[in-house]
Image 1: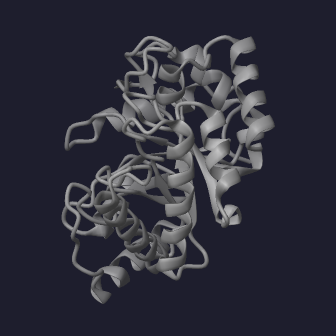
Image 2: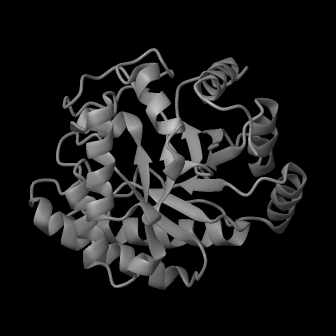
Length: 287
């Protein structure tokens, strides 16, 4: 059985995110380790790290990932933005490792007109530089597939495979698969035949062993539209049939599957979405 969870706010402190995921009976968590709308962030205070570690020990679940800032564009042709993005990546990797997180998830970035081939080359080089500058050794950097809006890289699994192949630190890299993004990029997750073909393609190009985290989001955007429009589970165009294929796939038993759907402070929507995902399991609880 997968480990179902959600992205949670860190308002009030990092440890509050663990309180929030526990309140909805989640088994996996994603967080920003800092304000993702700003370039600068204060260093992690020892007291905050300790509070987070204590809350995590008490929760006793291993699956926590951080997500990178949306300001970062590792494929940018602008030298100033590229330098700022690489520095931000190194800093965020350091924060993730200081907290003991196993994964840090990022979008590959946008090539802004220079073309996918050059964007892939630039992204891989800056991933390598960020990893080196971070002086981290444990946290794995996961590239997330994208919907493909504008000149964004990563809508194609071929592009993700190209970045992995171009990196000098490929052993530190993996993939986060977002269902809404894949649908918007044109991949079929709804029919059994399309679902099988999608993951056969991922296996051939990247390898399922590099797939470490899922973002489980339904979508309001038509397949192939290249629009990023997250929707609640079963209320979008992937639908319950598509998610049933995913959550019952034995290859992904034990994988973290994390919601990124909109919600109120009550987190009621997370409870409903988690219940929907668990309700699709064909065989009862976790062994």
